Amino acid sequence: MPEILKYIFLGVIQGGTEFLPVSSSGHLTIFSYLFKMEYVDKSIYFFELLHLATFFAVLLFTYKEIWMI
Image (cartoon, rainbow, N blue to C red; front, side, top):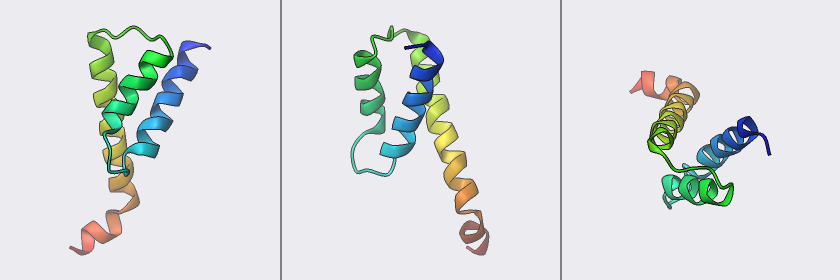
């Protein structure tokens, strides 16, 4: 599988599991292992980027409610 598809799939995993009462970071780590992606320091930064993107997506989705508060 091409690397870019692996990263897109990890983004989908992050977004889909963020709202479950389990660790989305754990899912990222497990799927990275299953995809045989090397776990290097760059992976940590990529995971943080995914979390930040999820934060902004939720913020964009709920900005009206947040503005009302």
